[in-house]
Length: 525
Image 1: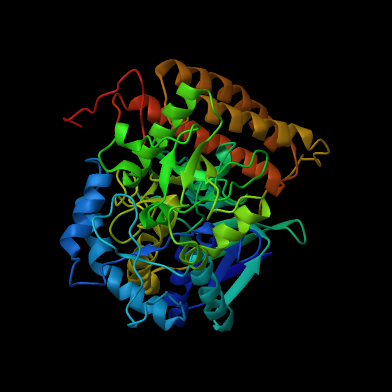
Image 2: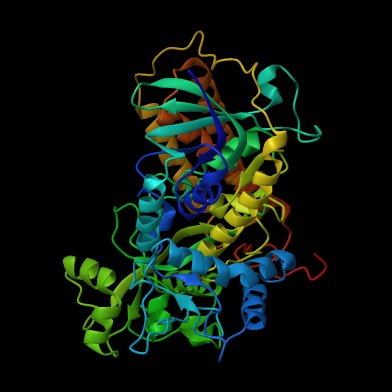
């Protein structure tokens, strides 16, 4: 089947849904959702969303400077200024869409402070801010007559001139996106979705690693598709590991212990109960995430322990329960009363600072293809994301993408001669073990060799093993009827390749990329 829409939106987090709402009055929108609308990285964001709202003590200059410092000299300043200066306007839009941020007894926003922030500027809804935003946007999206929500649909490939028989490379000028091939998991049919404008908002890459706070749908699909379509992918070596997820072996995804808890006053302690962060940074437990994650990794290796502790027992018990009910109840279900007991925590993959390179309009290097949110690389985060800057980046760039894509819409048409998906000669793959085992191998390779601390030898070993998996999966894909599971494996291998090769190319340690072979920062880069 062939479907035609003005706007094709692949991904249903804050970036995808806010973009859909912003453009829906200008044309028809297909919102492609891999599973259900609730299953997105946005939903699992506990901490909050950063914006200057209390101008008595805070200002744009401070937020800009905090972001630049966290980014370790690698941020694109224009992107930082764009996000910070436009944040309050987008917060107002979220409020109009029904998002409820916590307020104090005076009616002012109850602002949190997180690592790397010089002021309290994190708007939140208890400790489930992402869920509050996601649920509010879902209500708006479902009520808009121009938006078609297509759940259990999986994007396989972006359609470009390549599918019309042209040879396309990274040097090909004016590559254009005409839509995407989409698998309808209910019918197992692959349909053509032709669009005037396509937006990728496919979230993160967490399941490339064995331990992640991301939901199981985070397999880097948008980045992998854009890479195969010959878009420029940048800064993939900057993988953020959240310092504190709940130590609960065998559970996936890992349960996040929000950084806001450390902003509230929680203290990191080693396996013997001793505070240790001041050995590594004068900011202690509120140092930026890359420093905290490496410090925890060091302490675990020194002690031979499988976790460290987060201590919030010195805070008022009822205040802790009221402020962090999700964390309190989750820990209590495992026999941990956080008002009396230390919380066992470990670092886990959490966020990707790189991705599909986009300009100030959120347009990729492929015309008519936009990207927002974690799958994009705007330059905001640089070498290390400042806490709670991700949700605001997604909606600010959704606005930029909406404004630009609507301005070009009248000059865009549907590409009529796109062929149907060709599955000639393929057969059903009845050996799911070939896929599941390969995925486990990718996760082990990345977690062992391409984690918090890296080296030339580890990266070389990783790429050598990954090449074998790549060839095996390529052959399997060519002879098999397409399934979501096979496509996800293909995507995580592509993403792993990008992370490893871009890490190999960076001959320094900067932000989230730390290598023992080049432990210092190259000030000339």
